[in-house]
Amino acid sequence: MKLAVIEVLDRDGHARQSVPVLKWPATIGRAVECDVLLDDAFVAAHHATIDEADGVLALEVGDSVNGAEWPGRRLSAGARAALPPDGIVLLGTTRLRVRRAADALAPERPLLPEPRVRLPLWTLLATLMVWSIALDWLRGDPTTRLTDYGTSLLAIGIVLVGWAGMWALLSKLFRHRFEFRPHARIAAGYLLVSDLLVSALPLAAFMLGIPLLSRLSGLALGALVCAMLAAHVRRIVPAHRVLIAGVMAALFAGGAVVTLTHTYQTTERYFSELYVSTFTPPALRLCTGVAPAQFLDEARALKPVLDEHARSDRFNSNEPWE
Image 1 (cartoon, one colour):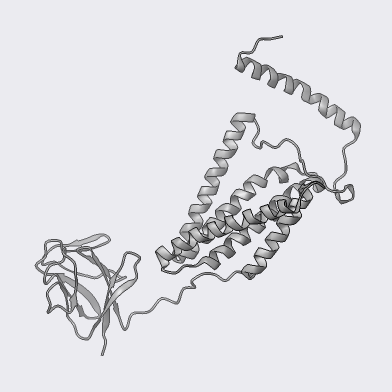
Image 2 (image 1 turned 135 degrees about the vertical axis):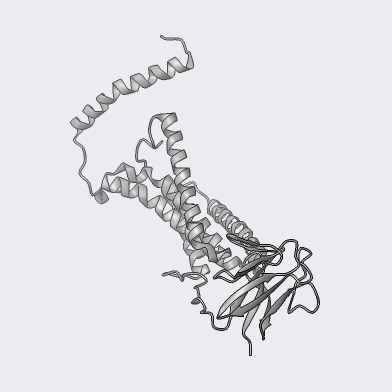
């Protein structure tokens, strides 16, 4: 009857070797007669023995120079102590984990949360291409040639293939699987959402009369880029979703603070955009307009501020005064 297994863990915490324990005690070392035979130059011939007494696993170090250790505890030759609750111990440079048949197993963890909306890759690509052509048509003029649209589509395709291929190579390196399609789906989805968001915020700013919405486009784009990077990394190392989300959130917050601070030091404003440059048909504007007299009064009030900025710029540039 199998009483337990002693697993040799790799650097990622996965078991690369599993040795069944049919009786206690179990010996560990480099000697051929050991129950768990380790190929580690920093492990003694008879390095340690694991035994069970009254339902408690204990490890006793044999004739070893390096001994055994786990977080908060180190054992030298001849020492004996109960194993940690997780059963993981370091002998030489080898990590071992002891699991008994009576130990409770942790519930299965989902590899990746299923998205609420999961569109096929070709649907995302087709939508992205149509949206790109529509934007080029709106921004273009009657002299725009059909080849110009083809150039834009070709550039998007090259960027997507290169970006997804890079992440697929990282996936091959760390997970031993070349996952091109999942990473291409992530990239295409976030690229489409970013195009929609960057186009929708200025339109909403004009329709609602809230210029801040347009000025937030850059920060929104930065947040989407961080979210896309987090999605790519989670695909490669799904066991660290919380850590990845925290790192990307900190990266976005730090980048936003640096960008806003630099803009304020340069222009004395937190956003470089002065006016909303996107317009819709007047019928779609939801907010009330400003009376011409009020607009003229507010424009006149800007003159002292602009004069002060002009004097400050001329003083700093050492230009001659008129």
